[in-house]
Image (cartoon, rainbow, N blue to C red; front, side, top):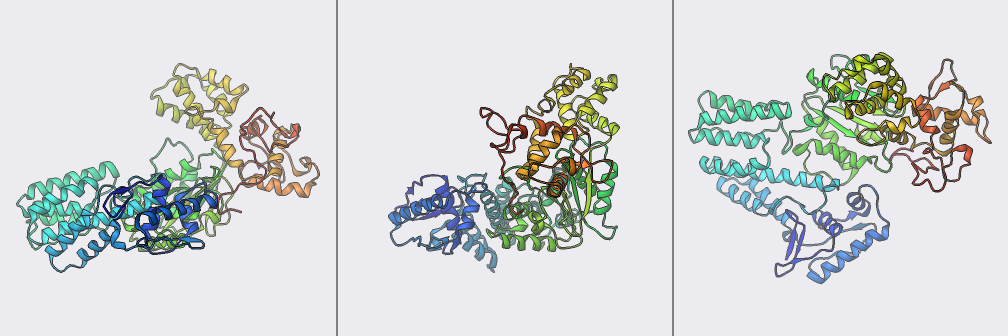
Length: 631
């Protein structure tokens, strides 16, 4: 009898047969409780782990619990028990019946063994518990699965390290060389394993091959990851180069690179086409430059589609090229603009811990424990780390994600004015001017169609396209995509399309109305009155408007002013020529005046109700829909 986690999640009956489990959620619940065997796990923690986005009703969860309890009772009688608990669940079992705990026990004994032969024996028995990838029949879409699988892989790699070390220490370099090839197939960037391979080659008289292997490994690191080998591996290479590694040379333990991933240095997304914005980039670099005292955090705020993410990624790449963040870059998309998908603090911390790879170890279930682990890793980093938090809705959403140490730095992007992060520089990102916007359009087109002559041949049409895009970078990208999709289309033809009806519908990328979607995301946190006001402003004939001329039914100027402030914080309004007067960006006006803009089903026709047959709604809002931590 027993349970398997280091491979498929399985229940084995007393005869050794596999007991069928009804579905994936049953296996997931079993795995969570077995990993925490003989401990009470809070119901909230289990539900948040198993259902990342849309937790079920309480009765649904308890149905899974009761079904698992019945199965365990039928198979094991009283030897495995799921007690009835209030607000928690648990499995009481002899941990020797679980392959994970047997593995951990052998691993601990291998760590402390004083004899290399004994250490090798325990390491082999630990590795024998594995039957493929851990938790392999659970969904990769569940964050807790990927986190625990990564943590288990870290321990599995350690068992391989101990086994190869023991074979080297017992004077069996040929056996070590044969052994190390299997884990290198799993973790090709693990510098501890590479170092052990170099030692084994050197000790079997193959110094030239060892040096060649080092050169190949370094080339792969530089070409594929953009990093150099760690100091420990370089020192070993030098030892081999200058006389070889004698039998007394010990195997290295490289900690500069987490296992199996190379660490947070790889957390930054790749660059995209970037043109202009030089002054704003310089401002961000002045914040990130360690030679400049003072603020080490910046919040880039602007209208949806203004290019905030592209900007901070470019600035982060340049800061990394300057060598300012040797500890790497952590990047997290907080997804505030996606309804129901904004990351809760616990999930966000889990994602950041995952970026540290092996250094993070197994990721705790509790939010408070995750935050403690995260801050400890940052404090222990010998080099500064840059944390980039993209698409944040409010300060409370990311307060626990901010590094505590002053040498680390933070870049945040938000569609809203984010003034609640103390000690951060606020950078307002507006739309570029006409020439800069035309350069952006040109850059995107030439990246997709090198040498395209249309833009130089039709400068007036280019200016018309840029104006029709409202100078918004996301709209410019969409226009460039239209030109790239149809290399025979004259720019004037695209300009005519964008000047006609259905402009927003024409601004698509891969068939998706990206500008409409971006504005919809920006509006999701607005309440009913704010949406009604935006709708009314979109229909107003004047270019600029103030609170006195935009009062809503039953609401005076004093009541409308806070609504103006909220639209301004969401960058759906921009300042006018005089204080107290406001403009609505042209594309936002088209969006709010369009037939797909819905406040709620019960609105009057004047407030933009769609016909009943025109469903589904773009967003049927009647109350604000904030991100998880934002009130």
